[in-house]
Image (tube, rainbow, N blue to C red; front, side):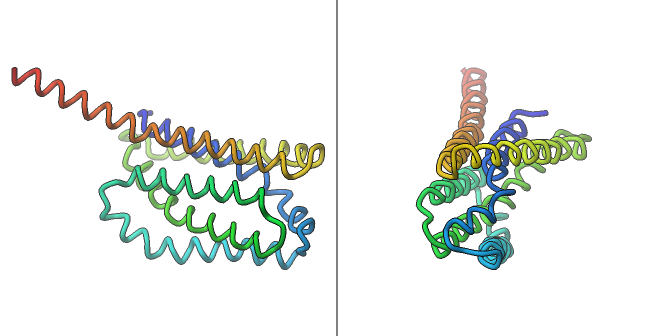
Length: 198
């Protein structure tokens, strides 16, 4: 498993944990801000439709761009803003706006993540290395669901949102290594070439 795959796995794992903490108790929070089951459904619908429509158009453009890793990092930053937004939600309208932010972040990042992950898979390990991602996804979602429920029950939603934000920031920080590592790698190759010329 090469370093880019490892970085992508670690970065996405932080975001899996952050999102998973809130998933199972999402409807309870919606009730606390004056919403109902229809509000919860509408909020998810806004997220999914926003992401789906934007993905359809933006993925065609992302095929052609040079700085895919940088744009992926930007999408993670947008998701961090979404997690920050949870701290300021006081009504269903605020929730809808945060879901739009998440929808845009997912729309930008999901095709890029899939493309970069596929591109960096070791030859002959396409199933096992995608399996590693799927495995982490299920495991972290399961752990996060239990932990998130406990934190919300014991301390309330605000501390939970702070933890989610911190985890997403760790994920963002990890993703920056994609660019940093490749920059160092490129500079190393250039230095080797220059030495050979001398």
